Length: 112
Image 1 (cartoon, one colour):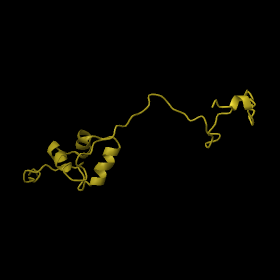
Image 2 (spheres, rainbow, N blue to C red; image 1 turned 180 degrees about the horizontal axis):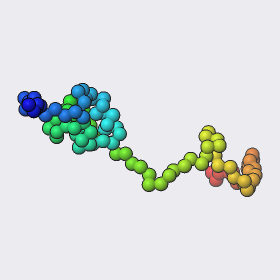
Image 3 (spheres, one colour; image 1 turned 180 degrees about the vertical axis):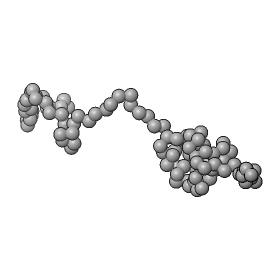
Image 4 (cartoon, rainbow, N blue to C red; image 1 turned 120 degrees about the vertical axis):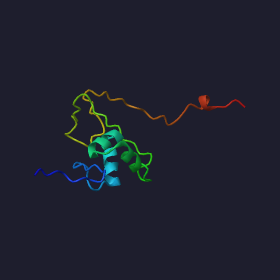
C-alpha cells in the first residue's frame, strides 16, 4: 500500500516560514535595507500577510532604509593620530602683528 500525505485543511505548510515573526525582526530587516517584497521572500509569506503585518502600529508607515555602498574602497589614512584636528604645514610663513596702542591726536579729533 502507498502512503500519502495527510491533508492540511486547505492550509499550505511552508517549512521555511518561522513559527513566530516579531516586530523587532521586521524592524531589523527594514534597518538592513530589506523592503516589503524582500521580507515576503525572506519569510516565505504571501503579499496579503505582509500587508497585514504592516498594519501593526509599530510597523505602520515604516520603510526600508536605503543602504548605499561606495563603488570603491574608502580608507582612513589618518590612523596615526585619530584626535588630529589640524593639518601640519611644513613651510609655514611667520607673520608678525604689531599692536597699535596710541593714535595721533590730529587723526582722532572730531570736527565740532
